[in-house]
Length: 217
Image (cartoon, rainbow, N blue to C red; front, side, top):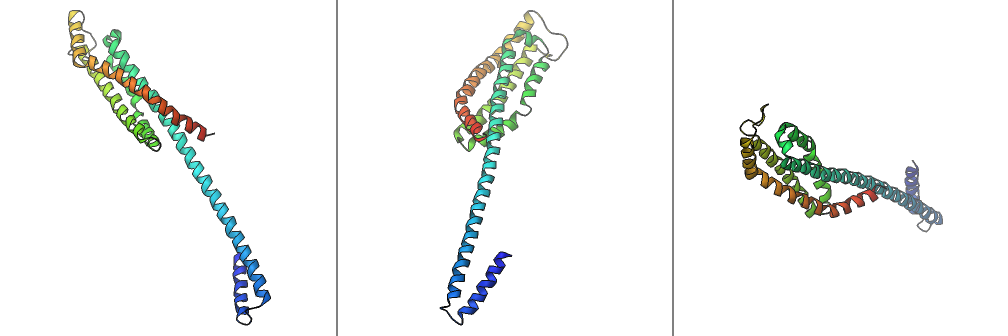
């Protein structure tokens, strides 16, 4: 409404200039109107800048929260699955028990793991593309370790790994040795290398986590 009045006044002044270009009224009013328009434009620009700044800050906080949650979850789950597999690869009691329970424990950890890994890789890529690539590689290795561990457990049980009764004595020992040669030793080495890789990555991941925590303050 105010701007319409200003425009009408400008039109009136324009008509005045057709009569007297040197009119003092025209000069005074034009200068006042110009100042008011400039002031409003400045206020709008400041408001727009504040609005955009606030909008961008909210986006950055959401990204920081996403990075914080996804990286920490991915890191903890990676080590947890590796630990579960490591126990299964070395504990003879677990091998002789129901292997379905062991595999189910790992699979529960992996249920949301791929989504967490994808989120972590996406957020980390904005800061460190090479580190994001490592997250993808480690994620794949975690799944490979789980599958190799499952192969070892199944081989160690003999021809009927999910049967109620278990083969005992020398025959069981033979199945165990064969399982180690076919998958167990490879899985153990993979577990060691995987743990080293994950822990080597943590210092760089921790820097990003600390930055995210500061952004949320």
